[in-house]
View 1 (cartoon, one colour):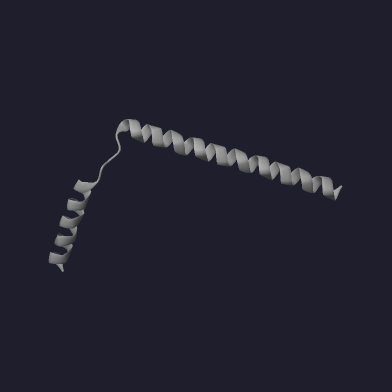
View 2 (cartoon, rainbow, N blue to C red; view 1 turned 90 degrees about the horizontal axis):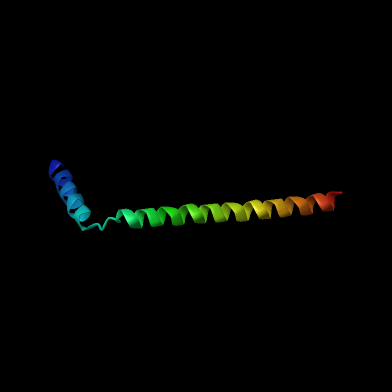
Length: 61
């Protein structure tokens, strides 16, 4: 069992060496992209929710 665990950990270390980690600049760019996308989607749903609420309020009156 310990041999399998040891082999697994060796494989993990080997695979982690192959990983290409993003640079600081890339990480900042990706983070800004994610935040902007989330803000846009949030704003979109706020507008849609407000529109549907207003429409239902007009219908119910």
